[in-house]
Length: 609
Image (tube, rainbow, N blue to C red):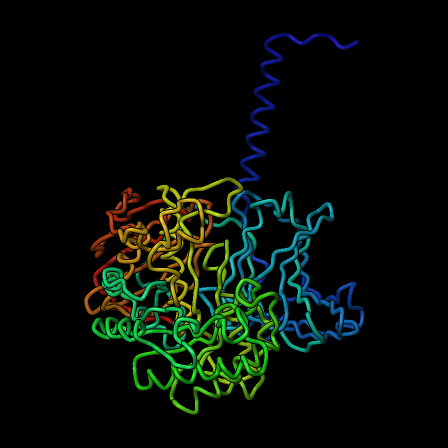
């Protein structure tokens, strides 16, 4: 029979239990960092092994020491037959089993240097002591390292979100997953599992990865979409914002009347642009009531479109114009009733050939496809047709963060370069964010302060992404809201409202352009916490760091105060900071804040590539 405890005994038990619980929580929140390996030394692979996946027993490979990011690294060589080649699945892994299981806390992350090819997927697999396995995909490219196949620093938070590791890690694998039969190698170096710091120290002289060739300046690559021919006030604002050209539909049905072509409105618009030092990207698009209606399909109707395209090229020859043939031909909205790669290829081929006859120097892009539609592009573009183009148009719209475009942009660029060579290049001919937030499952207002603030944050981050990736041409959609309708997302993409007044996105863009003016992009800070991006700009007398986050989790940032000239928000307002520790300023960064601009006296330390 159990005897009842005294009140003092009960209190003692509660206190003891509370202390034990707090100690357990503290142990979980403060795990000791563990270095898997810097792969230096002949015995550094003793706790590692090569493994072929259960889905690919015939895969072959080795795990050996080789060149690392610095000194030695581990090299996973692989040959993956990948099944029958139609339903392709295959994998190999470099598997590490630590001497003792690693406790995972709330800030635990895996960091490593890694290098791999674009033709495979790479995942980090963590197996806990209970045998549960969790995977984390490593993108083939990021803003910090947009070039495929080069060393880059990866930070993988493993204790956040629904797909997180709990408890202790018993085994960790770096796994190559094949999408086709493949032979290659993956390299890793300096793999670490442990806590990341609660405070990220950003130094103006931090080591940076150099930018993509041609990415030094922002404004020359930027255009903005418009929908009316006569809007001089909006054109003034576009020029003040730093846009160098506009993109505008040249409607076939408006230009051609009974076999005659009239360009009066477009002539007036181009004159207005040239007076402002700007140029035009004409979209030759849409059907004609005399030539097949909404979509030209027959040989006769396609030939008629070719004559229209040739007339435009002849009329504007030698002027500051470029051309895009159709708009989003891979969507039923613009190629009715259903998209066809073969049909669009016939139209594109005919139009380009006709234009080259009258103006061999015309700058021509294929019609921007919605999203990254590699299947459609492969159906349209043959080597001989691609050779006649200057660019391939893409519309990288997404509901997710703009920074996520880096991987898709790298893959489509690598594909085009591998299949066609250096020409044509990839153009981003349309991309923007509405001030109506379509990610929520409830009605939203494009006129609300919250919706417009969100658009401003995403707009600046989009243009920073465009700059960092070195997109040769990029068009923001669009300049002015199409109507006062506050509920329709399509009507609320403008930097200006329907009356021509600045929205917050325009003010944020002007702040960015002011930071970019007279300064050169010299690199992305090489090692940052997950989701944090820091871009260095050098002027004649100063250095500016632009820093922002693409994730909701808060990250405290600290930076040195000596030599600092200013710290401002994306709206150009003074950033509220705390002086902690002495001679440092500190603030909290997260995705909803938008970019922060930190300006110091010119840093003289050489850029570390």
